[in-house]
Length: 396
Ligand code: SAH
Ligand code: SF4
Image 1 (cartoon, rainbow, N blue to C red):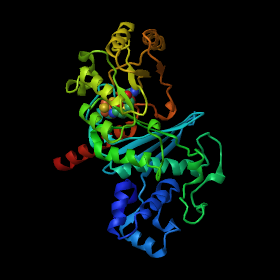
Image 2: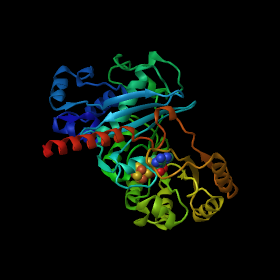
Image 3: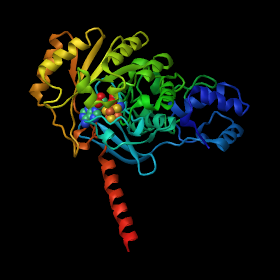
Image 4: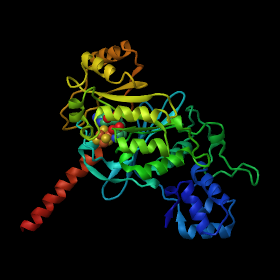
């Protein structure tokens, strides 16, 4: 069975060509799946019964399996999604006054092993499929709309498309009212959850296309941000294939330190990464790169390191986002004290760089960056238990 969430516009077009149907059916179905957010082919009421039956014989809409769904005191909402074989990934919804951002995952685990990252510490399990990546946005939109959440945080049940009738005149494109009015609960998507998006290139690009497609989520390229630790060849490909807003996890202003914190730097050192950023910028939807910089006490947070950083990136149009490091069990780091983060920010600002400090959201539900491995640790413990049980069995 084909999962309709797995197909971008080209994939849907190919499916309907295979079925011997007209190309506009692909768009119609895309509206139903990604705008009206239906969960079954049967609900696509402006398709003839015969066509619905034909489609349902080969395709379903299979969303993620939710393990848990928790809302923090500040409104941040975190879903833990089962991706099989005991693996789970997370997505986090962050409501703000003028936008709703969904932070999504691209891999179960991550092979890049950054020293300060809990996802890195769990190792690599597997790439998520397009359906599993797109399914995050699909599910979060459905869940938020079902609760009557709009981008502005207002309750607007009358905009709820779920279970509702298509309102548009017969034959007219069926853009859901909340998309037309810019009131979809999720206005921005960031690929900053678990995994390295550029290490799952094909499925990530296909998912980005669905996010941007006017017949699907219709997000502008400025509102979709991909965060990478710096896979240079894939970054060059993204520049050609689907340039969205770019965030680069820098974390250090010289190669020896970055080699230690972000091991992929040994393969693609800073000079290469920064020239790739410059190349990317002439296609990017924004005229700057966001450099993320996690603040590690006594490791990369001295004012002179900020000045070194400023010299390093002086030719790259950029902004800095300083991320207070979020601790997790067994990690060897400490979060920089607030005063040190502020001093670092000041040094960068004095050098002329716009520098923000990321507000930690959803701390009470472990939804902050790099805190996404809670269940994985459980799983590890369980594996140890299973292993020792197996060992005990063998010993008898
Ligand atoms: N793999 C990509 C995207 C996912 S990580 C990347 O590395 O950019 C998203 C951001 O969270 C990255 O900037 C990453 O460095 C940061 N991060 C990882 N672990 C963290 C932690 N424990 N505390 C704060 N930020 C963390
Ligand atoms: Fe992977 Fe990003 Fe974590 Fe590094 S910081 S291990 S690239 S998820």
